[in-house]
Length: 415
Image 1 (cartoon, rainbow, N blue to C red):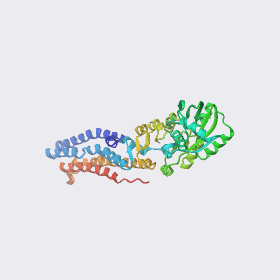
Image 2 (image 1 turned 30 degrees about the vertical axis):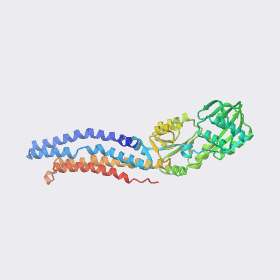
Image 3 (image 1 turned 180 degrees about the vertical axis):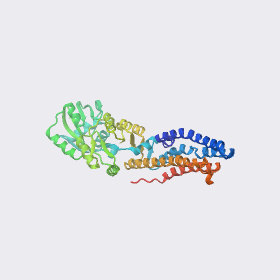
Image 4 (image 1 turned 120 degrees about the vertical axis):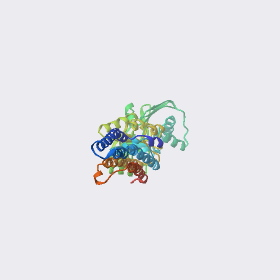
């Protein structure tokens, strides 16, 4: 990935190519005008006229312009990899500096993704846990895995469910020991019209206030219990959010959790704008809405549910611990799963772009300034450029570009 990124083109390279496409014919024209002017309208002679032409062409050689962008991208991508950031292409490295908003997934991104069961509410908690775990055995969701693990640790005997069906982003349903069960979000319970008594409702409100994720259990159309799971924030999540906000970026959290849980987590991490109860297929739509506001948006996620949103965002940032599809979709991969590396990526992008602009100055401005000297404009003052010195100046331009790019190796994240 690093090698591919180093060989890729950044959009600003198109500007350099466009300038070179016009610059070369203009230089040749200037060289011919200098030759003709000195040869036909002065007594300078053929030798000096030819020398002026050759000096102009050599001193203005655009070879440094061709390496101005690639050398900076080469060093920038390498420096990113050294800091645990894989950048898949020069376009991502350049675009990251323009970001105005960062959208974070919650589970596994802002939080550790290590879910654990904290509460089981029901008339017979162990039996409720056994039934739900039996059904969740067929689920691939992290919450289901946490519930099954908890049941196995308690030594409960699980059975094989029948008629299992996953309800994307909402829950699961099936039959366990002849009991038709639906397990999922509060939103799902409302959709199926499941009855819920006041005691369970009060318990749910209490658990929601604690920022826990709740799984409601309905048997034969009635909510009979709740299983609560909790997930800890990553150690650096709050610091990363605070730093991004100081940099002037909008920070948004997008989650499938209910409004109350999302609000609790958002308050803990310091995010004012959050979107709750967003189904996996709707995340991409929420990213589009942010873009329609005129924002340049990055999406940070780790799961298969985040892949479409990662692809839709201007910059998709995937955590290295995430699913293969997320890693494939993201333009930037944070190998160390450290959210502070989002800030490092932005800083590196700005630094690399700054080096590219400096390189273009050395490649274009420096040589252009010497064209009048090479053309003999200062001959009356005794200043004449020998083609050998013109070649030296041209080479020095390329050396300046490469040396300036190599200064990126001294880049240190300011976090």
